[in-house]
Image (tube, rainbow, N blue to C red; front, side, top):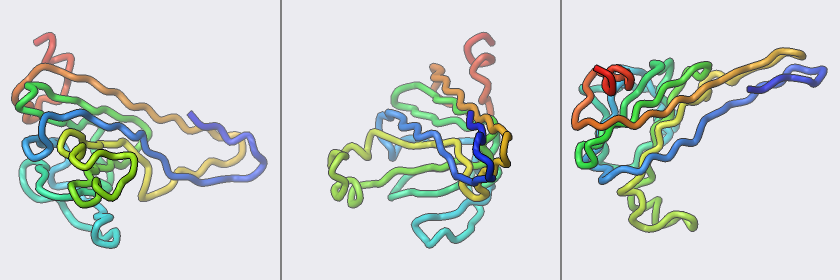
Amino acid sequence: RNTNTDGRPFSYTFAFHTYFSVSDISEVRVEGLETMDYLDNMKGKERFTEQGDAIVFESEVDKVYLAAPSKVAIIDHDMRRTFVVTKEGLPDAVVWNPWDKKAKAMQDFGDSEYKHMLCVEPAAVEKPITLKPGEEWKGRLGLSAVPSSYCSGQLDPLKVLHG
């Protein structure tokens, strides 16, 4: 929640920096963002459309998915777990993994830690949030971990847990 108590409007971008522990980044898939437009921060924020039936990882990734759906799944077959990320008030979703070369250059990141992490971050990046005096913004992030080996379209954790 953010309220403008100042006498002037202001704008800002925002992201929940959610780092997920995964068994092996090259075995993880993200569902819910297929066919979405994204800005690729590795290519000068050029705009592309995601191809394929899920996002898989083979190299460094730093993308901002635009007008992302309210639910996204991170499927980790080896851990037999699916993380379900839900969001409100945040139109975008950032997907990030530094891969080996960047991980080695980061002082606060172990050389091989990239293999066991993935960021999927609900965000407002493309269009900053602007608040006029007295206005309030609310954003919400929901995280669920559900036991599974495959999710494909079943992104409601309550349905997974309770049939």
